[in-house]
Every structure is written in structure tokens, then in C-alpha cells.
Length: 346
Image (cartoon, rainbow, N blue to C red):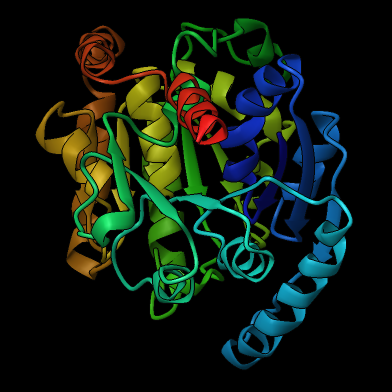
């Protein structure tokens, strides 16, 4: 098969990488397109994936709206000569629009329920929408549910083994307590209306956690001078090795919170909308703690972080939670391969 994969975020690179590698071994061909978003292009380059840069949508809502038809047309011109058999993407309305125009099948993956302009833009143009079974929404006859999370496509034990040598670059050992803090840029369409953690809370959290552990920050946006020394000095493809050995993740990324749930690391996630998968990870496994962006919840989240850091055997406790989760979930890359190969046989 000739497959177009459209990438819109660094996490999408991780989601598709094992699928691409395994399907290439079976003789399938890929054309990868990507927009400029954070470390997306860097990750593609570091993994050695040939790709075509589509550019970006810009920051303002007006700019984003103007760019939708322009990037759709750009994608169409790029893939037309490839003559694709299938389009894939994560909530990529670009892929859905172009696939529809070319009368090619399209399967999108999505795990984010609330405030989704993307759903409106892709729903009537794609053939399939694949979601985790915990997805809190009904997308109709096109929806295909599976018992997993996006992050299990690349962090399932079949796909990932933590490498403790990565910690040497951070100057810490496996036994050293350290915290990873994640701040997002709030530039995605589904981020409109969100403000996230206040600068005061970020500083307060760093100060509080630093009394008990070393603190590393990964941020999509710039940091104030007093927090910049905490920025993690690491290639983006190595972050999961670090998360696997951290005592705590604290921040605004649902993806990283879910990654930590799978890796056996406590996670605190702050967002007014939340996600079906982080809700499940809290309610079914107790591995993620969800908070809103309210001033009160920001303070409660710091207190919860300190409570977690005070537990001496916290990693052992979370390893047991991880084992229960993995027992109930699947290798999502294997599921994707089977799903696509079934489409090929139709």
C-alpha cells in the first residue's frame, strides 16, 4: 500500500513511528507530511523519517482559519503524484479533506473529546475515527473503539524499554529523586480559552518540589530567567526514558500524564476540560491525578505533588498500578497494523 501520514504534533511522530517501521518491513510505502509545531520536524529528522514540511497555521485564530484551505491545497499538490491508497493522521482534518477530494480512504485517530473544532472539520470527510474505548463521546458509525491509549503505540513493553544511561546526561542516578514539569504553549485549536498554570504557580511549584527532588522543566514556550536553569538538556526523543525513572510528572500535558501512567510514574495533570483517558487512569488505576486550572486547584495540585514525593516506595506502588493497566490494554501499534491490513484486503 501507499500510505500518507500527516503529522501535526511531536506526539504524533511517536504514535506512528513503530507502525511505519514495521509496515515498511512488509513492503508498504509512506509519504510523511508535517506542519511546524514545536519539536515535530526535529523528531522526524532525528528518527530519520523523510518528510515534507507543510509550514504552519500561525498563532491567531484568524490566521489559523485563513491557513486551513491553503494548507489543504498544499497537501493535495504534494500527495497527488504519490497516488495514495490510504491517508492516516491524528485528528488531521487536512488528511480527511484531501483524502475525500481524491476519493481515497482515510482513517483518523483521536482521543480528545471537548472543545474540538477539529472534529467538526474532519468528521464528514473521513471514513474511520479510531478512539480509545474510554473516549467520552459518540462519533457515530465511523467510530472504531479499541482497548488502549495512543501512548501504548510507542510505550507498550513490546515497543519500549527504559534506558537508565540517558540519566547520565542529566547528572542523576536511578535512585535520585527528580521531578519533570511540563508546560504547554496553549496554541492548538483545542487550547483556545485556556490559560494554564500561572507564572506564580509555576515558580511556587518549582520551589516546593526542589526541597525534595531535583526539578527538570520541559516547556513549549519560553521560561522566565529564574526557571530557565531547570530546562531539561535533552533530545526530545529521549524524554520517555527520563519519565520512566522520575518520581513525579507535574504539568499541563495530558499526553505526558498518560505516558507516565503507562511507565509507572505518578502524574499530576491540570486542565479545565480533562480527557477521557486521564479520567480513566485516575478512576481505574489511581496513577494520574486530574486538577482544573482554577487558583484553588493549582494550590491543591502542589500539595498533592508534595504528598507523592513524601512516599518512600512510590515507584514500587506505581509499578503495581502499571501492571494492572497493561493487563487490561493492548499493544496499539499491533492493533493499527491489523486494522490497516484489513482495509487493504477490502
